[in-house]
Image (tube, rainbow, N blue to C red; front, side, top):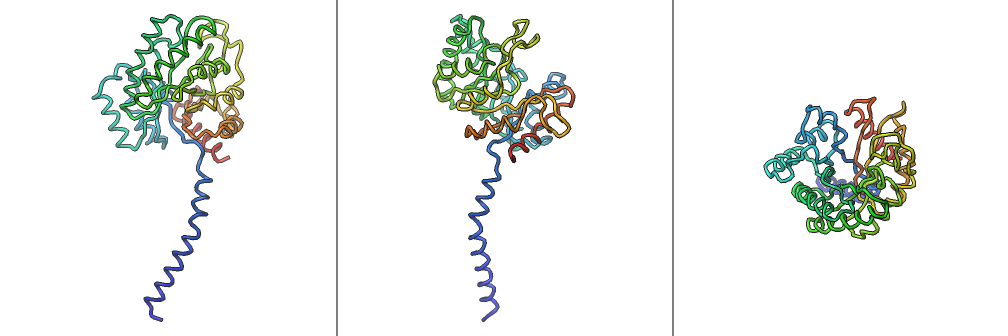
Length: 311
């Protein structure tokens, strides 16, 4: 037998062996792939942003270069006057492109109450959100996160919020965008109230962004964020209720123990609930602690998410 024929037969056998192994290797890779993808919420760096140590334009670059995260979630207050500034948005897109970063969502605050019972004020709030839908679409995002606040009884605000969200989602649907509501205090932190509101809207592009840290439904001051919390909704019950309509998850962290576990939320328990729901989307890191730097808090949260993904 010639040398060339022997080499041919040897290479053929090697290729056959590799082909036989290929399905096993693919199956193993799929089994090891996490059921969610990690993104970074810009609020995790709010101290640096408010302190003028960085700008919104720096955010996607830092996400990728410092933390190895390729998907980002913006907060509109850090580029409040730029929603319609194409030059600015193009610069932001260029930085994302140059660093291999994908834009996932914009968190929208301060544009009026979508759940206000006053029809004129609600219409103004809806229209105020349009520019952020347009900006999100321009940046290649899939989602905007909004609030469902309003002053009135729970029933009044729910009815108004369902109407406001429905009207906004009609506009967002034209751009193929989701509109999701985060539990952010008051009625929105009540699991059943928020789920009931979303079900009243009953539109496929409207859902919830469960945040692990905002479940206070009543404070001694009556304010959304200030004052002692007098009553909390069970976060594990809420997330289980919400996951069928969830279009993202906000992984809030404050403190960690010596083993790197989140002190205020049982992550293995929480992610068992999330996984059981069949969720396959983005989980955004949102560190808000005081004991660690923002950078270390982000890294700790990322490590924890990677651990629960493997577990």
